[in-house]
Image (cartoon, rainbow, N blue to C red; front, side, top):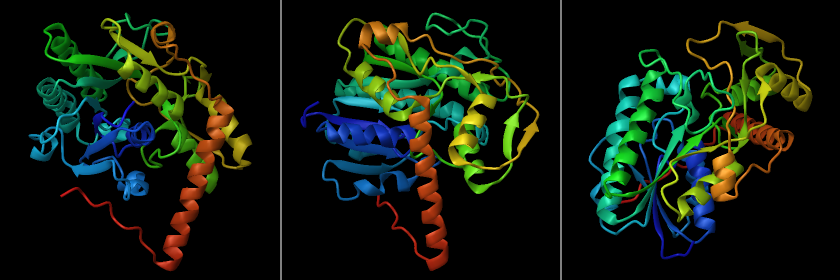
Length: 338
């Protein structure tokens, strides 16, 4: 990637978006981040406050895009804008749906106007509680279209529809990634995801929450591996590949994850079991054959290594919070671009 490329990352203050921005800047791109900070965190971008090739614009993709975004042409548009954990996207289901539909349309139109390549971050949630295992991209899913997760699951399905309609009609060059469970530094400790929940509870000695009997499976991909897959898909110059799964095919139960974190942290936290949420998937594992064939991509970070890095991150964040509370210090706010 050269410094002649100007990139918009919508949702760039989030966990995945901020890690993506770091990689884009390392590759020499000029990057603009658009985020409403509903679930994204300014802290994730504070280290970029003196970066000349980075600008932050606070705004919501559901609204008309700020005029400053159209002043200079973008070459690439990444759409990561949407709350992605159930507690967050269920808190305002109407906004979640509109972010996926109206927000995606707004960004697609921007890409069309600028002649930019557009990448949508979709999700393994489009497969619902899958009857096919592992999940291939041609599996149409088993989704409860009226349940409490539907604002996100169906919203992402609608976003994919819009993206591929723009591609079919020649209005924009489109790439769609279906992201499976991802973890790593800059996760929000309060987002309700299993990895952040278990690690933070273990570090603080609080009871570890396991929903159901813990036999449900997940496949966890470290964020660095995910970002590499996203970058490779955006750079892919072949014919329209359709949606591409990016995730780690190593499958384990939630109970296995808890055991690994307890061993890693040395925590004596007890385990508390709560009812399984409605429509929570029983199994989740990607078939990554398409990513391997088209992108030459597969994950390289082991679960043990990734958990060590993530645990170290959360431990450091907790230490900073204790220090700030003790001395009454505050971090500076991230200033939006004028």
